Every structure is written in C-alpha cells, then in structure tokens.
Length: 285
Image 1 (cartoon, rainbow, N blue to C red):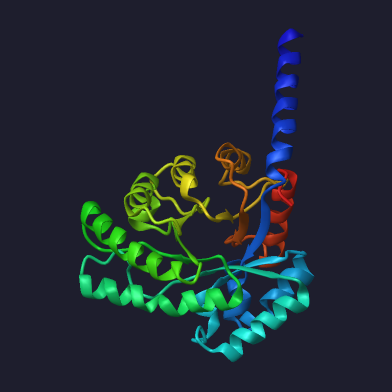
Image 2 (image 1 turned 45 degrees about the horizontal axis):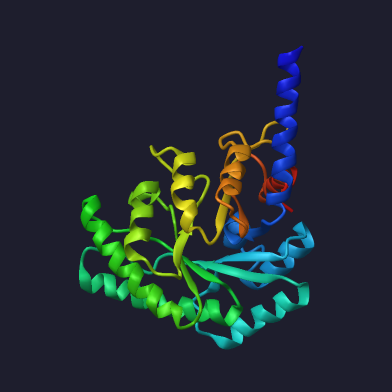
C-alpha cells in the first residue's frame, strides 16, 4: 500500500509541475502537414492562413518555401499573404527553406552561392513578420570538413540576416545535421546570436531522438512536433511525446511547437487534429 501511495504522489507531482511550464509554449502549424493538399492544388499558399485558423483554430503558421511559386521577392504576392493573415488573425512564424544549395558545401564558391540564394528568403521572412528562416546544414564530405564549411556558411548567412532582425535556424534534416552532438558543436563554434536550431522530433536515423533533441534544445528558437500515427488512446506510436515535452520543459523552452504531421494512415486533416489533441493533453494549447 505504501508503494502505491508513493507512485500516486509521484504522478501527481509530475502533472502538477508540468502544467505551469507548458502553458508558455504555443502551437503553430507547419505547412508541410498539408503538402498533399498543396501539391494536388486543393489549396494554395495564400489559403494557408485561412485553413490554419478556420479548420484547426491555430493562429501561428510556418511556411515551406517551395509553395511560394518563386515569389519570395514579389511584394504584391507577399502583401496578399499578409492581408490573409490579418483577416484571420494569424501570425507568420517562419519559412522552411529548401532547394537553395548546401550551406555546408565544402566548395567555397558553391557555399557562397548557397548563402546568397537564401537572401531572398530573409527578405520574405522580414516582410511577413516571421522571426526566422529554417535552413539546412547539408554538405558532402567527411564530418569534420562539412562541419567547418557549415560553420562558415551559416555564420555568413546569420550575419546577413541579423541586419533584418531575422534568425537563421537549422533543423536536423538528415545527414550530419541529424547527429545532435555534431549540430550543437556547429552552433557553439559559429557563436552567432541569431543562429539557432529547430529540433524535429522525427528526423533522426541511428542517433537517439531524445538525445538529439536534448543536444539541440539549448540553441532552439522553434520546435517541430513531427507525428506519424496514433494509438487508440491518442498517443503517437513512434515518438514518446510525454518524454519530448518533458525535455522542452527541462530546457525552459517557451516558443512555438510546430505541428508537422507526416503520416500515411490518417488523412492530413485527421492527423493534424490528432496531434493538436495530443499536445493539448500534454498541456500545450
């Protein structure tokens, strides 16, 4: 009986201590959660603010660069997007940028071109009121050489973005970046105030996902709540969300937690709603 009482008290302490810190975190919606609808032309990037608010009651959104239709510098288009955000009371949080070259390219000329390719996205992020662009630290070669290149490329881009008050944040997006200790070392050595990480719960290969997120959290300026599938109690079947949220609490994280549903069993709509319900259950609204 004494043992059962201790377990009960322990559970109470866990939930009572978790309720207060998690209230500081906020839910956002990553556009990739809707990539099937976007790729099949069932919606467009301009529809994203409306969809986020009216279908999911989410008021913060994270764009994906490929859905801008090459209009990163088109102020008329960006103004239309701002109008939609204002109409539905939605905040633009960041732009996830892909396909602009490797910021960790070991070829100095190619790396510099990749840095400059991201300038237009810094402009777009500033115009839309985002706090960050999410970039990749990719590169070919051995770990040490790519690390040196990534420190250089990311530092140069961060210095450029600082003039716009925009952060440059790196996701664990396969390759060396999905090794938490590698990426955290890049952050330490680059040492730029507006350079940080975006820990994704799902993008790890052989590296332990919980250790990887813990490695990245000291530098985190956003978090991606990747989800795939759910059991009959509403818990993610591949990722221990309770453990992940406790890591965020332990590191005093208080920013956005972006839903990025990537499953194949539930529809995009149902997968997003299931992820919202799980985050709500764990104290994030």
